[in-house]
Image (cartoon, rainbow, N blue to C red):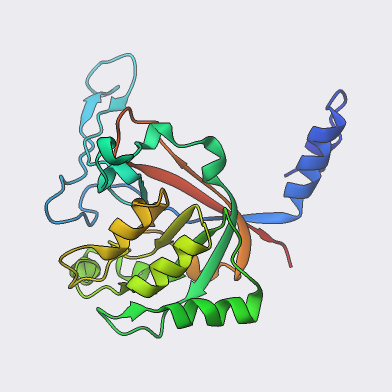
Length: 249
């Protein structure tokens, strides 16, 4: 952010103060690029990006179509994903904008074995080291699974044996009244799960779930973030652009 922008004449003082605050941070993109061939849940549609008009075809402009599922790439699950509307499962377009902004807490789960679970004791250990999880926080687990995403040769590893959250850890996060829980894996429930207890516990309590996040290992234990989904009418979720803001050294 340039110093010229910060001192632009006519800028309201509150805006200048906010710009100065952001100048003290660097932005880290937590979003995987969306492209054909990217990993997707086995029963979900593949991402497609067909060219519809182009200069080479003699068109006046260039644009592409996009076809994908709501849970493609880096995305959020809304309660509607597992909780019926009649039972209070709200859709992604019904989320309050404040739910996409706020503190991001990162718990290191890289020591968790494939298809293992991060437990309540791991969450409590993080709190002992960094402070209590507060109501309205977003809690992410860095399992390191994003390392398999970048090349087609390792895409099969994305789709198998990922770790997740234990039932007890979910209950603790529900008690803390967080707004969002997520990880860098294909699901917040571990690979071998058949009844999806993390989804049912969190979404059932109005807590959104984030999956397939990138670069969580570059974040400190506590930072600020913006995770912005599309307001899809009656949507069970949406791809997002997620940015973390980390203090400059």
